[in-house]
Image 1 (cartoon, rainbow, N blue to C red):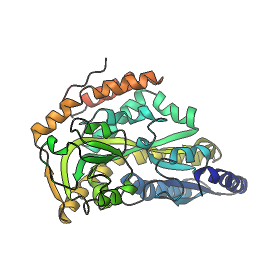
Image 2: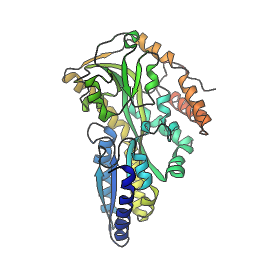
Image 3: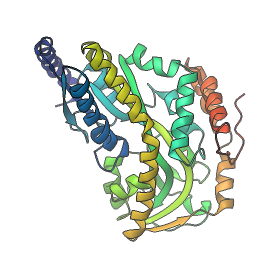
Length: 356
């Protein structure tokens, strides 16, 4: 069933569910993600932390119960359909990467626009949250334009590069096709590589068949999706951990719940975000150790090569800020807030980014 055709069916189902729930103590919510539970840390935390914690707290602290219908791995909506699925009520709650909404959520991808940032996911989550708190527009856009509430942020652990062939210098990547989520593909311009937009579910087959010969990817997913089999060379570059995933809830779905249940969902959503950094750091370590164990060739990029790569992207944050400004978004404000938040942390940028 296509997403559009599912809207009608979902609307009918929702009316039946909520009609029955109005006088009952048990409420059913549909939750899903385009990525699978397991290889994708933010989805695993959705399934293993958010869902059971909401169920537990509602049962223990209220007179009601919550039941979840879970649909991960695109079972209800794909990676580029989840925002719309929550907006239309096909999903009550959705977890998704903002990277697959380059038009609708362009500015929310701001961590991607300042690469070589915090390497530690706890720092990455904290600095990104600081920006959301400083610039309310980011949170309000979900509600005002897409009819949903931002329950919590999550992210990806530190980005590196896996390839089918070995390389040592940036010149070795010239003309090589490399896959990525979209907002991170400009990182490849300095290397002269050919960027190819793709998604994690497509990665293995595309690497195996030569659609591209590398992937900008964090180790947790590189291991989990077994990309090391067709593409065994994994180079630690440190483009940074990225807090660019969101857990959102349809506003109508939330408003129909009793107030005490609503409050628990909001609190667990924030707790989901607060535990994300540590969860991602652990996944990064497991990913690197796992890649070594399965025989992948893991190495570190030479510091001087990394420095040159970072230097080549010094204009990127300002470029994206001005692009967002031109779209009527507070681009310069958000990018400056992010640079300031990182500067106030323990992390030091390898280059100086300037927003004019």
